Amino acid sequence: MAKTEKKVSLEAGLWNACNKLRGSVSATDYVNVVLGLLFLRFAYDKFIVQREKILSNEDTKDFVDSPRFYSKDNVFYLAEEDRWDYIKNHSKQSNILTIIDDAFTNIEKNNISLKGALPRGFYLTLHIEASKFSSLIDEINKIEYSQDESDDVIGRVYEYFLKNFCIKAKDEKGEFYTPGNIVELMTMLIQPYAGKVYDPCCGSGGMFVQSAKFIKEHKGNTKNITIYGQEYNPKSYQMARMNLAIRGLNCDLGESDADTFSHDLHQDLRADFILANPPFNQKAWRTEDELTNDRRWDNDENKHIIPPVSNANYAWILHMLSRLSYNGTGAFLLANGALGADGDEAKIRENLIRNNKVEAIIVLPREMFYYTDISVTLWIIGNHKKEKTVRRNDVDVKLRNRENEILFIDARRLGDEGKNDEGYVLLKEEDKKKIQDTLFAWQSPEWKEKYKNVPEFCYSATKDEIAKKGYSLIPSKYIEFVDHDLEIDFEKEMARIQKEMKTLLDDEKQSQKELEEAFRGIGYGIE
Image (tube, rainbow, N blue to C red; front, side):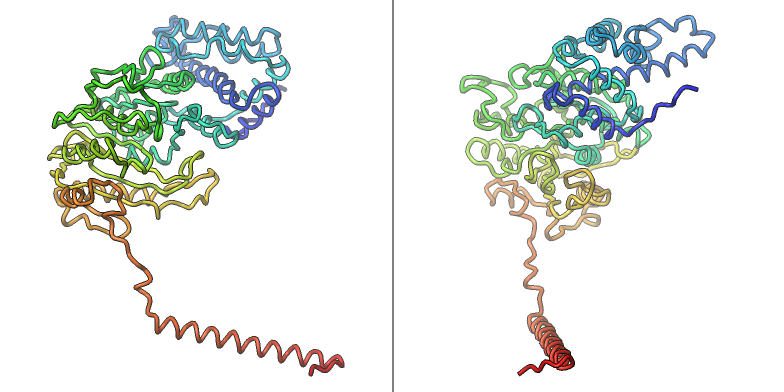
């Protein structure tokens, strides 16, 4: 009887895989080696399901080897030598790395949507003993994972390597993998049900996968969204292409990796939703002479202020606004320093506020990322704040005119304080719901009945109030702080302390008395 192979969890399998790679591959390359193999297995699992479906139908079974009958359902066609079972069965051969590279080449050839997405040539550069590589494939084969299209398996793998092997994302350029917990909050707030979704710095594509998950959980159809993205890092670009492709999500990430500022791949795009986590405080993003006449820096008052070379924060904001439709909504993360930055950034921020581009500012708890313990800000923006209708929970909802106000939320007291197995702070479900309910109530035509300013949590500031604060967007300048010391009844508190001290002294005297009696009982006197 054939022995049944024991399956292991994703995390356990990844750890076992890394043990096979130790001493042969740099820790920073673990993720690239493992992800390519996982992609081959994931693609094969979906291929087999589709193949059985085709064979079970009398009308289609003769087309079981036709790529068209796979691609129509967003499944990749795999020739026999490109399938995981073939690779696994030949894993002990000395040319296994060539077999894998040929598989990637053939898969791209047979599936146009994957052109340029797979790591062709990468495995041929590895110097791993055949026996070790065979063991690695065995470990990958044991891993259990969800085949649900809304489960960000590749994102989870990437997150695992960040957590366990200290691999800083994006070559330490200030960018960080965005945990799903934060992305879930972002999607809850802007609810990307249908239309064009854009991320100008998409990394591994986690924002898009989370959008698909949100749509599915709310009984929507992922075919109603079209994904546009751009990524500068070539490895992350490939990762995003693989991540989205195996989920059958319609995407346009451009022909190749490219810098969003100097080589904008989507100049004509007007997105309905933007979800992004740009690199924090990115320096030297252009030279002094570059992009000085770029139309993205224009605004409604035609004041052409160029974001400084020393920090790209406001360049990202202006870029996103330029790619957002008139009725669109954007949610993105930035370091808190952008809220009160001075110089040209302050001038840009003033124009954004005066021109009604900023909807809400939400400061998140500290330690929500692997590689920074800072508290970051979630911005909600749009090209206008007049009355409009949006789709929420499959229902059309009217929003009031919010042109004279900006909502500030301080969420730093929310979260689980890191009391979980993830290694960083997570917002609990009730925390995310509290933030969502606060924003939606504030946007509602019945906001005066539904919304209330809450000390140490939220405040709706008028543009006049913000102007008096020098157009700062730092929430603590507006949200009421409660001096809890003033709530103390000092006379009552002193009486309580005196009573406790008296009890302690009485207890001490009683203990000393009992000790003296004990010594006398054994023949020792205490003077």
